[in-house]
Length: 106
Image 1: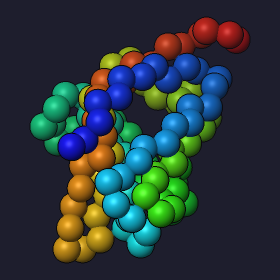
Image 2 (image 1 turned 120 degrees about the horizontal axis):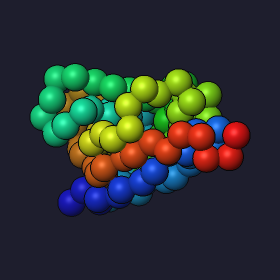
Image 3 (image 1 turned 120 degrees about the vertical axis):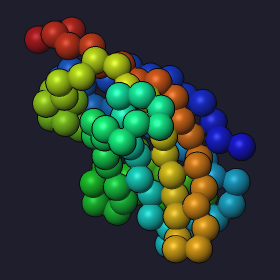
Image 4 (image 1 turned 90 degrees about the vertical axis):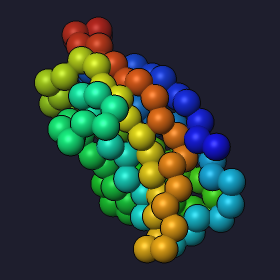
């Protein structure tokens, strides 16, 4: 079962979190996709493993959304999901709502 995680991205701040899979997902590719609404084809931001913000190791996906990425966003609210796949299997590990807060500290 996928975890629901709602969070806020703050301008000028990195966002880091980890999602745990129910089994070893070493070798899987992870994709974190933000959309304007669930089921929409409009992708606002996509991060992938292994070198674009996501790292897969054992049964975890580590997510790092850099402050520079957050500062470049033009949207304030989105729906997101984190999916891992290995060619024959696709798992949705987490989903939720995301918001962007601009001008918080600088």
